Image (cartoon, rainbow, N blue to C red; front, side, top):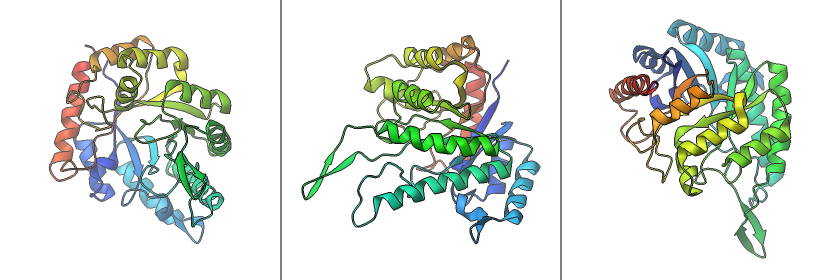
Length: 306
């Protein structure tokens, strides 16, 4: 049986939302992961005078309904936009205020995800790792997982009230100084201990992190499946050559997708498989996105059963 396939709208970052949804549907996908960036669904664009604007929410809901795509996950932008709940000192600004603003952003995003009818919302950890030293700064190896646990514990409580599940995605060492490895992910999930905080894996991130740890990427995926089991509730697919998070089409890098899919099947994974392709370069320019998504779907369907 072929996997349930969705696509992240961020590939069409230059497209209005109705057009992005159309491209995904016409490429043969049945689900959508909505990117919470401009102009698709930037969190603050759903607010007016500090409150969710019901008219804007209703218009967005109708667009998704009309696309015929199932709601899979809401992915608020958090890597490029100015949110960072691990900032310790950022002169001339008040670091505590920056952290508070960042957490408030995630809380607004949870409310948007619930209002739009998405069952899941993706979360990641930021890149920081700087500590004041004398008149300057030095890099710190401290991952500050305690603050991560406290932050996601707070957000998980809100997610429970909102009726959604947060899915925590480990990033690579090039994108985060916190949740990167299986140990990081397991520590945070165990530390929070909420059924409203689960795990999301990304094949590209697995490939880069495994290589950085001198591990076999498929063995590393299997270790995630063995340790986390059904706490893994979402999967991004993309490819690279093990050096950086390139978000290439599956098969254009060196990750072994047939072996990965066999491991997922053996572990009983029945969740969505969501294509998250590179949103930079010439990929977002017509007619590339539709072609790329269609080819990704066909390759995935062929590789799923080896």
